[in-house]
Length: 133
Image (cartoon, rainbow, N blue to C red):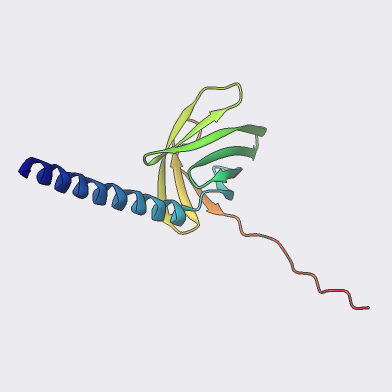
């Protein structure tokens, strides 16, 4: 009987810890709010990163424009711990360290994205007045 009680107690503590970790991760994902449009400039290159899908993965499109021309990459992305993993179509998978500086401002560091700072691009939606008539 004691063993059953101890096992139930351990299972209860494990469930509470697991739930707490899940809630904290969900809060972190909500704060990151990665899906959307991100942009930045570095060494004369303007880069835009569009992430779509869920809070922890989906599709991406990145466009870099600079003196050497325009480069576009599309594929899938997902979070793995504190890293963003990019899986380009027809290319090699790369993993970038993710840093949250403040809401709407992140940093990525990894192959092809060394020390990049991205700022969330605001919506440019303008409400039009309703037609009367």
